Length: 72
Image 1: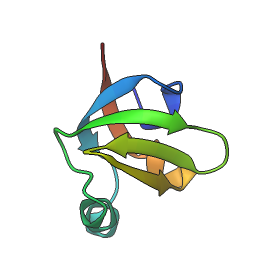
Image 2: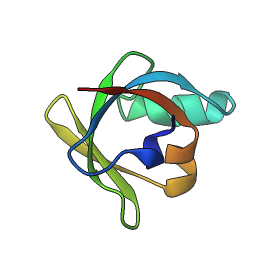
Image 3: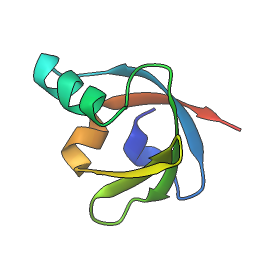
Image 4: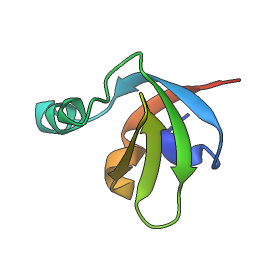
């Protein structure tokens, strides 16, 4: 499953990132890495996710490269 497939309010744990080191670095600078749990805030326009008390907006192409598993 990819991050874009979550609906607002649903949570997912990051299992991996497709893409090169540049994308992984950009995500790491935002605090997103394998193992962190994200809550979808909005998927209209840029994808907004919340984690560790912060809300981060990601481009749709960037979010498409983040693999997750849904967390209840």
